[in-house]
Image (tube, rainbow, N blue to C red; front, side, top):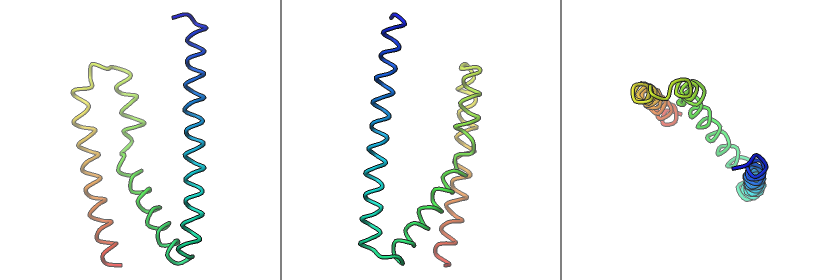
Length: 109
C-alpha cells in the first residue's frame, strides 16, 4: 500500500471515529439534561454521585493494565502468555475487593 493511500485511509478512519465520538458525547449530554430535568436535583444528584463512585472504582480496578500491561506486551509480545495471568489475576482480585467495599458502604449507608 502506498504512503498516499495509507495516509488517506488513516485520515478517513480518524474522521469517522472523531465524528462518532462527538455524536456520542452530544447524545450523552442531551440525555443528561433530560434526566436532570425529569428527576429533579435530589434524585439526579444521587445518580451522579453513584456513577462517580463507580467510575473511580473502575479506575482503581484497572490496576494500570492499560498503561503498564500494554507497554510490557509491546516490548516483548512473546511474554503475553506469562504476563496475562498475573495482570488479569491482580485486576480480578482488586475488583473483588472493591466490589465488597462498595457493597458494604452502599448497604450500610
